[in-house]
Image (tube, rainbow, N blue to C red; front, side, top):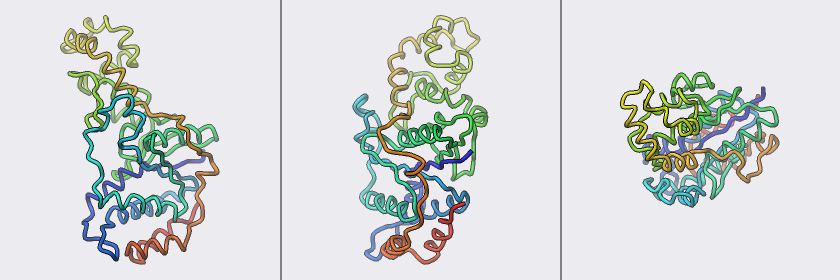
Length: 296
């Protein structure tokens, strides 16, 4: 099958920002470490894959996601990007454009939703999705022919590998988060239910709905503290259902994506040249991006 590569940009931009010294600056003395690291990542990805179809999803909805309307504390524990990083985010989008990649952005839907929508749309056109991210939440999108690629650790998981590694299959991942919560995104979950217990419950019952449909069976299960687990689940049902709404990735966001819009364009040599000059990048990185931009 043809493949669509869908990149979760933020994780690689933030990783570069925190791992590359800020003394890497443009000609005005402004830090460009995040853009440089993101450019190196993109160059490496394109060189390895020679992909013909790519979408790069950027997060622009940290405080304006529709999930904040459902649950105002959603992601409220996250610190907004510092000014020296925020100034680099636009340059990262400009870089993606210069090397011929489609950018997926929305002020209402998160990068995960844009990736989910693009994957869903492209599957209907005969493509398999390769989701490039280290965020396990995105494993819920993996279908029979898809791959979750944790690029930084160079781990590629299909559905069977996801089940082996995380203890649940992709369709159960959102229910796992519903039970355990997600401290990073400030999603509540069921207090007192940890990952080990949640995995046992999901492997026995199959889904969150089945757990609550058959809740009275839990005290008789050979689970440690089964009576307590039953009480916790009963008390925490509203939390679990809320958490599932927050953790469920949207696959029908109102964005325009198609095989044509996600087809890699030829590199814009002038734009790349001007960008690298403005950011004070050397010829080595520019040459790497130019070489990597040759498609299969």
